[in-house]
Image (cartoon, rainbow, N blue to C red; front, side):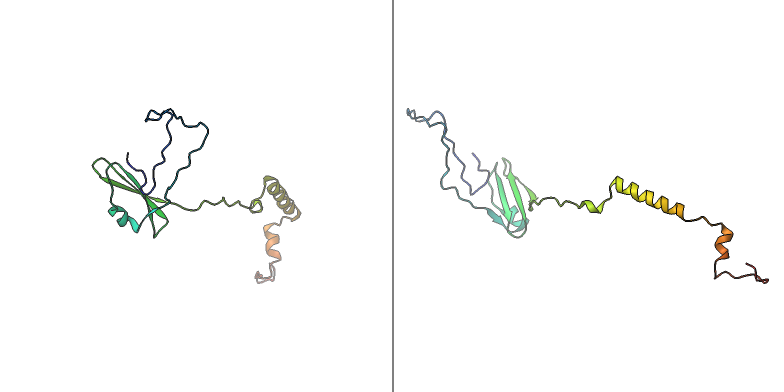
Length: 146
């Protein structure tokens, strides 16, 4: 059986029927605690180091880059042809909640719209001749009339 991740021992689960023909059956309901499982990570220095990592046919290796926050999964087929995939991992954080005060509600918008329309009704409309009659910058004609 090929090892999926080198450096990690495979966990052996007790079978219901022992192969040595003994009459001892495993106790149902007990948990199996693996012993002497090393907690090692295989570290490499970049993609070139991952490419050079020795492999065996039909295997898969997790190679952690010691320079970046990436890891490589190197798999090999029966002829020991390697395929390397690069994965990036990052810290999961809670999404930032946007404050509700940044946006107006429909109710607030309608109230604001009504205030603008009411303010427009209070301003008297002027005709074009009225606009220019009060303009101090306007030059009068020869007779002094505007």
